Image (cartoon, rainbow over all chains, first blue to last red; front, side, top):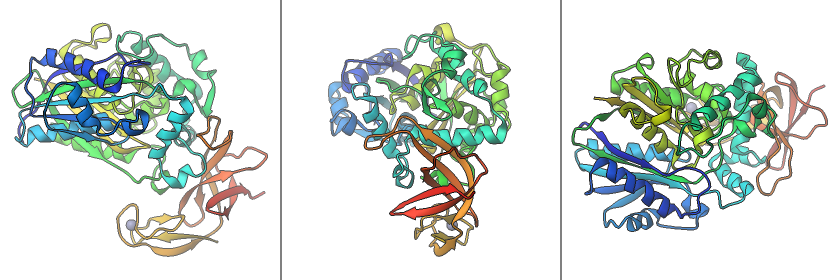
Length: 374
Length: 99
Ligand SMILES: [Zn+2]
């Protein structure tokens, strides 16, 4: 397998945007092309979870490639809320195989123009019909996981809220973030109840946004050293454990093995905090902390920007925002910026190895990506 | 009793299905007790389109090994670990406290 490098990245500000999905992708791709100085591509890989329903556009890979002014082969990849990571992995394989030399990867979603209830209902289509018939949504299933986790490991409401406080602080330093304002713990734990015990500030927002990343076989500063992709049963009820995601654990093992590295070597990570409890679970599934120890590590400040292992320096899905198809790629781009020392006000100290972890639906198609500064 | 399926790999599921979600082998039909314990629960205050909130549902560990998400329409809160009986109404499973 050939070595694959990240040559350049771009991102729009996430949030409520008036532009079309194609225009957002154009903005991000322009920035990535300028960053990479690469203008000729063999193919365009497009990630978008549900543009057909969110925007009414079909044939989105061609619509976007046409907007970019490129008559290049394009294809769309979808893995629910990990789409942005899924498309990155697919593009990686096309370069690693030697088939392509330069590939443009773009990912985006346009959601905020719809009423929240409509978006929530559309997002709920990713979960099992066995659970959906009761009216279950993503937050409801996440709440089932969270309640059980709190029961088994004694995680308290305040500690859960600290995830939101930390990530909103990081987001306040990120000019691309949907939310660039800090929140207090009081505000988090008094926010509106969504699905007990998860409140509004425990949930990532619905956002618009796009990002772009250029992969190349030519040697550059940042190399993609490890990839892992694993899944689990569609239904939560068919799984052995409710308090950890085997899809993350298995994807992480593959990525660490491929990169010949280990959790303790990771300097910075972006993890899938669609819900505050997921960040705590993710940091355990990735092997950073022992099972049940994620909450204590958070309380001890280990995962803060200036801690030993900064988690979600971008603000995470929680504060950067969650355009569902874009988030997985946005995480990888944040790691790229951190390793290059280009993360501006939220830059962590001397990071050489960074990891991004993305969850599809209720922990199906979870992907782990490891980047290294050469 | 509740109808479900079991696999040689040990997986047990409700409702029944022909192929094991874990290992892909054919499952055989099985019957389980219609009671179990609450593993976890939630009350959803922001329902999807077509539903009225709040909606309470829980995951129950059925006596015999399968897990099941079911609805609950009782007049008092349930707790984790509580014993419940499960009824099938149309295609939905609904639980109620045993005592
Ligand atoms: Zn089986």
